[in-house]
Length: 611
Image (tube, one colour):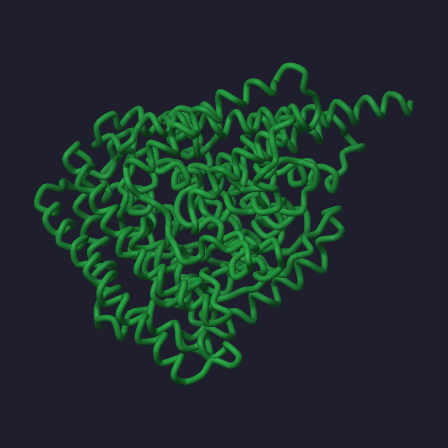
């Protein structure tokens, strides 16, 4: 297990871990719980040069010591990181919980849960597929190099070239880890190997001249003031050479290894297929839901939610005169309605992004009536890079840089505009943008007087639970669908999607469903195409438990709100409730529930005093 890589999963794990670290001086000595937690987070962050670049503060400054390097992926580095984690967790007990109260006590609880969770995951060294079709260095590192590495002058380009060379070393290190996993019985399913191979082959097809690490560079060089033609040519040549001599051989070796493993792979989908698979899934559920829910409980909640949402969708469809066929069949008809599709052209893609910007303006115009605090950071809506469209989800959010050099970004996958009919886009916008991830992540960065950990989105159930709650709040509180019943159907379709995830994730990983059974169930319940569903199901195969976080988090926040409304009655203040959820930062759901209960008790006491 790579400690940083297990924090959040995929690329976002690096983004969130970076935020805020540079603002705490490295020479601070721990004099209290907040300083201790800050010091620990910095020590973890600086293990990875990628993390520091995601921070967006010290690249290309006199403090830049990292931006020509990549992290160490060896087993020795992993063991060193784990030893540091154990020491850090033990040290936390010297600062609490005895003697702490209020925000310091909350910080201690959150940090203790976070460190304990990483240690639980570390018990299973080979609990994941290090290279797969959607994550791992063969997917994440190219995206990092082209989208995140900062190029602003000639020196930063040379550091880019250095990182490309480093990428060759990383590929060798990770290949050695994959070989070790294989020797210990950890081989991905055959369909995962095939998809990973397709992605790796596509990346190196056309050689260095057509590789994204090379083809994405000229436009960036054009923006460097004063860069002379000779220097430009030299930098381009150096980039091509680094790709040719370091990156392509690394991919070729990884491809050869995966081709060889394919002969040993089986077709079983669930993590139960691995040594200690049942225990691995239990830990994955605890980490991703931040609850003690069992796989059976997750499955049953999912089935109940599917039934509820399906009934609500049927009511809207009937109201629109669509009464023939199953709910999913009628949804599929709407998905294919030409009137709802943007052309799959450059002009159509531009029109889609323009529409998303209109939606953002509309929701922000109302947001002040439902939120006391709005993010100061802007939101930018951009296309997913074309080279990563096949492996990317339909949309995702990247938090802003602390120094303002990068806004919050909502990436929309536009490989095929038909994947996102117009009636489905508002919900995607409210999830990834306002009032979803953009509010949650950007506002957290602005919280003052708490440890770094409190300002990060390190708890998936909280982060994704909020975003799914925000979809519902946009509809039922803000009235964003009052004149748009199909838009509300899009919200319910998205909620159905998350409810189905509970069923299929636990189905594959605990109940031994096959890949094909999971695909058939999701197609039947969501109205999505088989191709879309297949990508989703195969994502759940390589990220066990992650898909359960969304609905679990949403239901928990809705339960907290219902409790507050019931206890406070007419004194319930929705804006204040949103503050208590968002302005304390990310945390496990159990601790969040305790925080809400304390807030309710304080407000009730205030009401009694007033009376």
